[in-house]
Image (cartoon, rainbow, N blue to C red):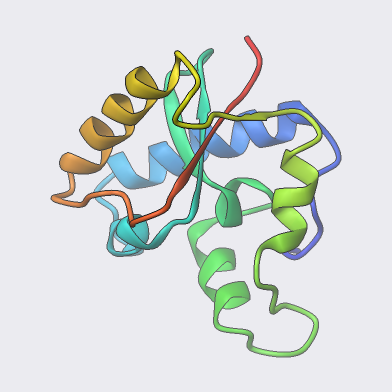
Length: 131
């Protein structure tokens, strides 16, 4: 069931990979329409993929579960994503503009989003998984 925050780093890594697989497999669920709206982006250097906090920060996430959860079909499924950010913060690092890694991450995210004709939203915040 979506809505249960992650307990482990490896779960988040798997979700990053799955998110990208869904996008690259024809995006039949419409995830690409949301790419320019994401506030917290997470980069995993192992897989070299990006993932949004609201998708990668929950257990058992699929595109169908994401939209069910996002649309708040009932009080047990809706969430605004703050739970994911507090969980992901335990094993990722936010990269600020004064960090020497920021420019490379920023360029990487812009390149990723450009594939779907999207740009990061103003004020987005990049985060980095450990190697």
